[in-house]
Amino acid sequence: MARIALNQITRIFNATTAIADITFEVPDGQFWVMVGPSGCGKSTILRTIAGLEMATLGDLYIGDRRVNDVPARQRDVAMVFQNYALYPHMTVAENLAFGLRMRGADPDTIRPRIEAVAKSLDLTHLLDRKPGQLSGGQQQRVALGRAIARKPQAFLMDEPLSNLDAQLRDDTRAELKQLHQRLGITTIYVTHDQTEAMTLADQIVVLNQGRIQQIGTPQEIYQQPANQMVATFMGNPPMNLLNAVYLENKLHIGEQALPCPARLQSVLGDSRRESAPHRLRERFANRPGQSINLGIRPEQLQISPAGEDSGLVAQVTLVEPLGRETLVRAMVPGEERPISLLAAPEQAVQVGDRLSLQFDEQALFGFDPETGDRLL
Ligand code: ATP
Image (cartoon, rainbow, N blue to C red; front, side, top):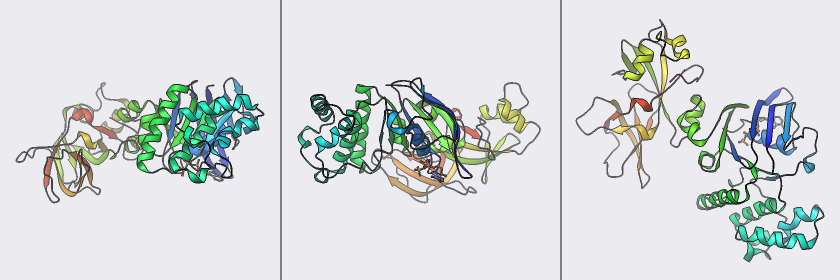
């Protein structure tokens, strides 16, 4: 087992910078997850750690060894991909043993290790089968087992669950977490599935356009997003964004003017005050009518009882019952995109209803519409 450290890693393909200035250190035994939209550079980082890509700039350490010039085979890390590429003509047992055999381990070492790995992944009864006789989930477990059997210093996993159906994906995800708790092998895991990121990670690295946006625990990333990209990427349904203009102590959202919540007023209304965050002061001081993207998570919007309409007004456009709760989409007049909120199943919400929505001002976020910087 080993720590993995990246120091200002940059990878340039021809003229394209795929990843830039990537710096983080995964301590020995931790499980880190890299997330971000397609093309943000997740796989390039993982492949660079594995030695399948070369860093154009920067230093890479596995344990205390600088490995920039160490070939992939000598880095002692095991990669698990979404297409698990088992050897079809070999049995499960032979597939599990393959990495060890290639490293010249003797059969007396291999056998007990394969048996232990098979037991931990519930593969014992399948050891004599060929991959073609296994379900997708079983094949994926064999691929994991093959990596585990080698006892590598670290696991690098690139969307290893994405070929599985929803139920199997949930089950295998839970198995993976338990396995990591038992084995404690340093793991870097790539996904664009935020549920996987939230449930598996000790720390999440959020990437966009080849750059790190934020590193933090799942709670930090969710509750204290560094910017609009992180805020809207993590969370399902995603955080709502409303463009608001602060003018004369009111927040103008679409066609509505709402009283500005006290917390916002104290920073927007008199942003020269020392208590206002520095970036807000710069942005709002002496410039009335500045707009701000207000962010609010769907679970923070509450529907007011009928007859009370002092809140944000929105008209229901879609109702999606999910069982435990109902996902409601509604248009705020004058806004371009619908907002999402969650209603209790017993709340009778119908398309066309006019809702008045309340929220706790502590739950509001604010972002610069131009840069996406978090202001609130
Ligand atoms: P996905 O989730 O779609 O797999 P990703 O986050 O893993 O995406 P990468 O595959 O790392 O993204 O790609 C990052 C960027 O680098 C992309 O813009 C991609 O087009 C570019 N890129 C990756 N490999 C190469 C290459 N061999 N030659 C040129 N550009 C490349």
